Length: 582
Image (cartoon, rainbow, N blue to C red; front, side):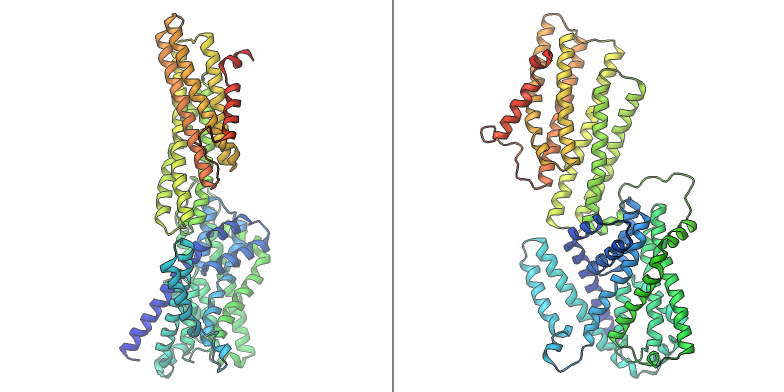
């Protein structure tokens, strides 16, 4: 094998790995909604978890990526450890799909229809379709589909290049001696584990083994232990991804390692016994591309059949190896590992934003309650919730910006931008809650009292603000566009209320019924409550945009009958005259 063949082999390997990575990323983006749906259907049922793991891994063509996703899900609280175990087992079976695709390169027949199944026959067509979709696609879905086809074509071209470059190694004595060494099962397992740990992909390492099988020097006796070792090596990615994660996420990664180590130990023992006692002739036969794919599938299925009934024992094992810490762990709100799967990361952002919305709502309700009575514990609670929403805004903002830099679909990009806007409004609502609290504290500290008329008017405004808050936050938390559409008419009523209450206050000042100190506090309260309503309107607008609903918030009154009906209803409900008579 001369230097040029070595360079060709390295080039083929590079194209193979690049094509696999390119195709996997594009598949992940293209199947984003599907991944989200699969995740939503997860239950503790073993069969469902197993099938989910198989499906996700078959979609993204990487058990390492699937397991890293699972570690991220467990770390973020999206998945329990019990669910994770079943999904990880399914992922080990799903990863065998790649080897079967690569085995198509071994088809050898003069029949035209059979030859059409050979990648060298249809890969150029896929590459042509892929580049047309990629270059002419006006939306990300078409471009991702084109990238998938181009990635697959690159992968198969790299596979054929690599196979062609190493085909002559079958006549090299040193190469023959190398694979004679791998007939020792322990060395074979170590070789498979090291190779897979280095390239961090069992699918890719199986592909390399299939390429080497073209030489005719890789017997089943050597290939099977190498395949077993590859299953151990692929756990390195998940173990690395669990660094810095919470305890349950570390346990999920340890489950992946334990599953593959135990499975390999058991079936390697069986393999050695069969080899020593029965001495089947098949083991000395040269492994084919189909044979390697079949051995890979059979081994992973056998491991799953062995350990699936023992998933509870496996869970107890990892809990024993990683016991609960007596100290409480800091809660991780957003896991960077989920960024590898943008649709799931975006869904997690929505969940954390929902927590932020609930916190902001509670802070404003407590701020309004402080106007009646302001004990120290209530004031402390309002300020703690405001600090919490500040924290939410910081982590969500940084996470969403990082997510926006990733290759995500156009729809997900729009949703990320809307969530960025939404968290700013939620944070401002909690800021106004603190401002209302400070006005309440000033009232109590200075022993300032509003006139009876002003107190009644403030009750009307507080009730209106309470309702607009419930409508806006409820529309986001419950994905309710109907509630969101009622926010803007109420916001307009609150604007009118503020103007009317300000005018009434000036009249009371002129008549000497109100003090200057009370007037300053009154003005601050009106401003903060009216601005809170503005932010609620912005929240509702984001809800409608996020749901792609056709309703228009700022539609002119002359056009929107629904808007006019809601406006009349809220104007009557929060009329200062009508309210005082109730």
